[in-house]
Image (cartoon, rainbow, N blue to C red; front, side, top):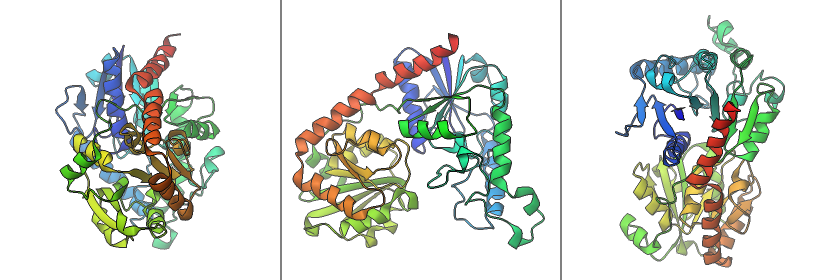
Length: 421
């Protein structure tokens, strides 16, 4: 079986990391898998860069321009929206033509347009589409938060700002954007079958409620993780390598962009103010723009910045006493999975797929949604009250049972083979 995985980036972002890990898992389990990307960052021969990479980058910029105009020339929400208006054809590439199954992942920001996805569906090849967020089931957004319009029809989207105040000749063409893209997605899927794979049971449940995906197959398979790479290590050794204090209990927060409001840093800030013995605690911050939040924390902070090197990332996890991700919306965060694979207990809000990863008071603590006080209670429980060795063992057992490469690859292979029956 030959599978072509399609993702915008090879390494950047959670979806890219998950797609890359899935490719390796499939290869290790007898599947001939390749990955097609716009942004190739390594010399991995199994990863192919689209030959029109420069054109795809211009497509990304052109699509952002249209969204920027739609948002009234404001940057806020500029990357919360995708329209699928720009992209390149992949159906003529040899990697596409030789594949038995086309496996789409995160294909936004100029990689594939809705028109090109329809062309893929018209090729007759079986298509699997892994949902790393809700965008395939909505019009334009990646996070729905409290909005439920996708259950009937996306229109009058809170992010779909009118251009009437700009008196722009483009306003009549661009607004209302959500209704227009919803209709285009309906046309894209009309008469075509796709197997949508959600990375969490929560997201699968949301996708099944979408009027856009009515009649489509929706299943749930988690992302895999290589436990030969992400594994426990000596905490003191890791801290020495990273130049971190040996005598503090360290809380880890990680995000690709630390200042992303949806990752909930402000709730961690509030929780830190409520902790006892602040001199004995510290916060490690892994991700871009970490230096921007250091001065706002009540505890001593250790900004690590954005790290690409996987071995160094593993050291960061191994150095931590607890990992905290107070996100306001999440599918199945790779970071929680990575932390647990390193034997680190985790804390997060009761939202999205987080309760599927964190077993309350067994592998960590699930705090009430948007409740900084309960987040602080979870930190106190993990750091001062829980049996740390029992937590570590439970984390490792949970990862092995649910997220190992072999387990996840087996379920995807079953999904691919179901097209033949």
